Image 1: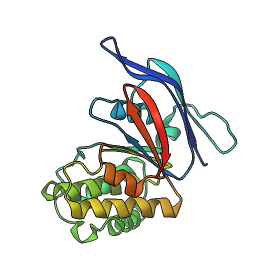
Image 2: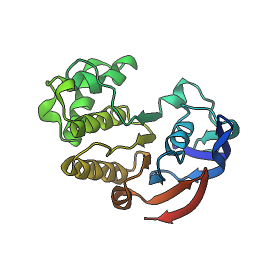
Image 3: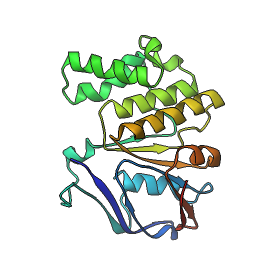
Length: 221
């Protein structure tokens, strides 16, 4: 089931101040979108609304399947969406167990869990740390583990909030390569909120700029 995300006339108001104003957009499948803007511009709010983690005050967000039928916000849809927060939540457990968590709660069998987790850890360059306690990872390694935890469930939409914040250049470059390789596999649509202009230019197919609650420009990177 290939999903398409449509955002229609979204408004979000905090303490009487519009953060998002009448935003509409259609996200095509299997591309990388980058939402940019200064602090307080509404990037994270927009990202969370798209990921169904927040509800707009006005407007609608909906997902269509390949037959253009609107999908209800049920458990099956949420299994197709994953969100990586700026600070990755880490369990006091091994890197392997942190990445495996989403598969375990979905009832995957042990053999498939092992195969999937080892594949994604190899993909993000952390296979050699699978037995290490995740709390001992560097900031950049933790970000990569968060991406591994996101993609191990094979989502159709991956939302990333500031994936390179507090990350050194080496890990930033690794994250860039990971995201571009995900796109090449043509399995997921990636939507990123960031203030990192250089990173956006490296990974983005489409760059959306948010300022004063409005989408001002849309550029092909």
